[in-house]
Length: 156
Image (cartoon, rainbow, N blue to C red; front, side, top):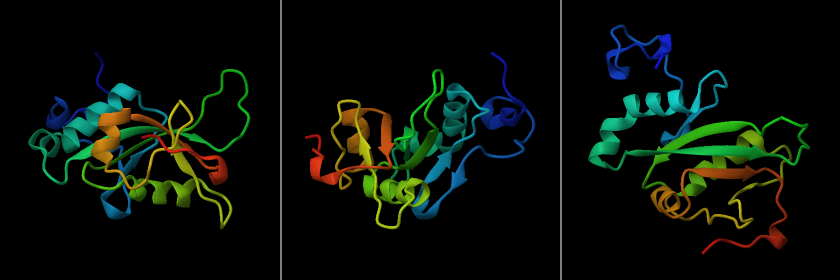
């Protein structure tokens, strides 16, 4: 398989130092990656190279990488996909830390709050640990920027 120049460092199996990391550090130890130029495989390879040692040793800082689709209720044209963001945070962190970040970035109104929903329509409780969410629901979640909380049911 072809390895992009960005991943030609020894950590990625190459020889030269990488020119940059595809991840952006956010407050609270969160990391995000929304580079559309990278394939999913490349994002996970970069994550493994940068954070794999902590994950292997399962330290408190070990991060879990979620694949988050952003749904702001904008109708999609045929063939168009929702924006995708890879977000990583410590497996011991509460999902509320990620929810706060996504509310700040993707909710437009001052009083507007979003929620992470599963494909079944149920919301994920923000007080759950990221490790627990990952083990119970997997790595793919959807952030809904517009939510009617009076009609929202939480997954068990």
